Length: 449
Image (cartoon, rainbow, N blue to C red):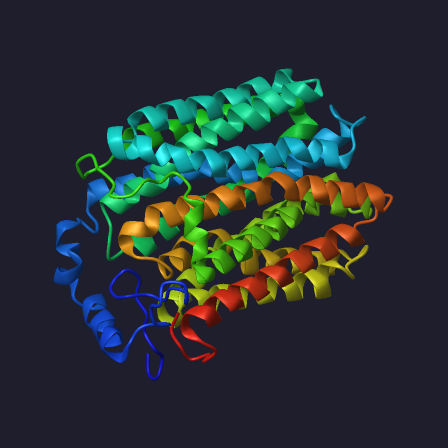
């Protein structure tokens, strides 16, 4: 792209720290090699991938259905947290209730690391069957939950474990059918989380006053059962069982690479901030006199913004650089949080603008992480870099919501501390991502990275 310096993953010697004496960034010859390889389908082996056709696109449909179940629920956390805190768990503090949802998210991300080995060795069938079964059961059994430990067992442990089993094959199976068009195919599947985050809150808003919580949770269970059928039928692997050259078990020695360590720190603080608005925006609206119905609507609006934020930044990242775009979107998260949410108060209009703007800005937070990681390591090292980073990041999802709840309690129900925590988390994430980029390719803003 004009004067942009092109840097492609896994095709040349990437930066390592001064500890191993390798040079910072690629040479001019390596830039030319990366450019040539990026435009040479035969060099990349893309001719061996279908890149389309009925079977390939049916895999995308199956993955879409699976990820709807996993991330549609996590995108609707605010609805359930608000409802539980005012009904079954009203005697518990916001921080205590938050542990239910944070444990669910932790298990999804941490457990997903290890299910990749099962997928490589045995394929997706067992994982998808057990994962969909666990998620359907978690919804069907939710109506019987009346005590704190019931929700911890059914929603957090059963639902989180189901999500961990299902997430990896849903993403990995797409890579068996797409290489050159992988970003497009994965982007389509990944929008399911935002669509689920629109449908589920609006469905609950409509059903709860009419049929109550028990039947509403059953309806979600039947919805998940319907989604489980295409997920089990269509998700498959095309390539033979793999024998990875490196283990996907987290390897903390990878943190000796300073640019990777800085990126992991950026991921941690970004996830610290990311799930707080998703989880507390509904209760924020109701506590400021907007009503329960609007509380559900605002979650749907945030996910509507996220729908566009999940694929538009991805397209720009392929053109302008993955780190460049994630740094830009994190900056927008800081701006929207501190200039729109913090002063929103009782203003419904300002809250709507924040929800849509933050949804769009944060939509790429999860989707661009794998692409950014691929910029920092060789192809054969990607498995251990990916598992190490998500092992660390999963602890951010475990702690962010309880911290937000504790700040809410400490402020006597005022949300300013929780909002500042979100904004500061994104500011720290911005610093670390920028530092990771600078240590790899330097300060030049036109460098494609």
